[in-house]
Image (cartoon, rainbow, N blue to C red; front, side):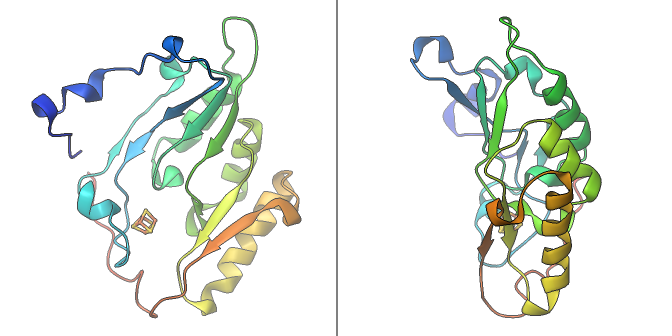
Length: 176
Ligand code: SF4
């Protein structure tokens, strides 16, 4: 992980003081960087080494959680994270609602992960379509999987970028 410049990245170990804020949501990053190298994207340049958390529930203090991951589903621990979020309860017994700020990587959406997202109470689902038009069956399959999991087709938003054909063809790097 590329850590911040202040004192060698010491802020990475600090949780925000959400108790000082009058709001019902918080931001969490379960990962940094991205497994892909889309030519138009700055993520892999700014955070050249991907980092994946295994668990996030120790960080949850608010009833609404916004994940700021660049590629949430690329986390190899994502199924486990979704499971723990689904089972998590705040001290007053409430469950949490979740949302991902970035679109889900369409190529990584499986029927199992779609159901896990639903069980973890993710709302306002968006998917990213950064590839070629010929890949539309992959996008369609992802929308189908989400629909099967309980996300109505009309509610699934897609962010699409139409650039040159090989924009996504650079190899993903090995994160160990
Ligand atoms: S998948 Fe998304 S976050 Fe990752 S490099 Fe491509 S555009 Fe950037």
